[in-house]
Length: 165
Length: 240
Image 1 (cartoon, chains in turn yellow, cyan):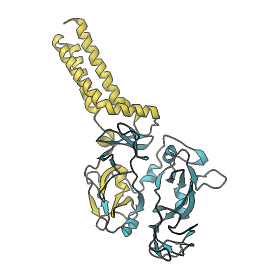
Image 2: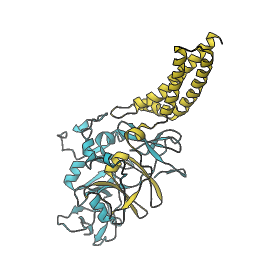
Image 3: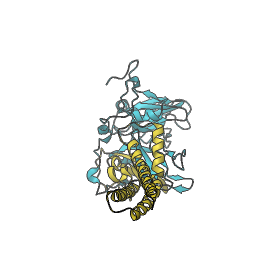
């Protein structure tokens, strides 16, 4: 294989690495607490978030293919190891692009919310609750819990709703 | 509500926008702003969730009203991480990333926000709790904000008695009479915290509820740039 071919594989891997890094890092940088966000940068970050999983998956496939091609033609050594490591890094970024930091690190979702009768539950009398009544069904979401989970998908009185806090 | 175009959406916490949460629905991948219920990115961009009327009440008040109600149970694995009961006060000490210092307002001042079709207004929470009964307008809408018998729960109503012309003129009863909070001059009826007349000419009538959001000033003001404020000291900026 020509030297120029090997250079081409390296360029492809580096391009995939750059795309994946941006796909993961840019939304993390923009969408974080205690930082003011402008409308444009937020829109861009959300766009990257939406397409990041696809972009990084394609990048991972391309990087792995390029690394294999490079590996087969390049003698063992530091360069070959670096190329392989870069491809692995692109794969790791593809996994990270699918992570929801807010649900997996900062808070945890309530996948299967369970409920207890008001008369039998242990809640302090002065605890605050977000309450709704839909089609005769009364539901209460204690703020102590909502301040942690923030989002609860529920069905009350036959109506699907999302309680947020 | 989370049914949009006949499709049921499942929401996840997905980020933050100037300290107001973003949600993402797993069906379309669209991002939704918590405070407005509006999709701001993705295939459903521009769509609006229908607001379900809710209250923020103490457990004692709610349980007395709804003894058959159901309460969200703690998830044992996360219970140790749950917030303190004065969560909003604790959060009030955190810095805010956007500022709207008009009229001496502090970013983390708590307000009760009401939005109508033509106007929005922020009622200072501390003042409402102190006054216990607030009569005012949000645009052309006459509103009545009532603090419950526990001194902490708050509800808002349209300040007109259905079927009765003119001003209703509610006032708060000072005597502690169980289940009764207000009386109105127009019909001489007694009203409870749910906004329903329990005695008098209007017995059985309920006032129309108005949605109200307890929020920090910076967040309310960010999404309601033309909001007016109720509760400022007359003629001078608010003193902290």
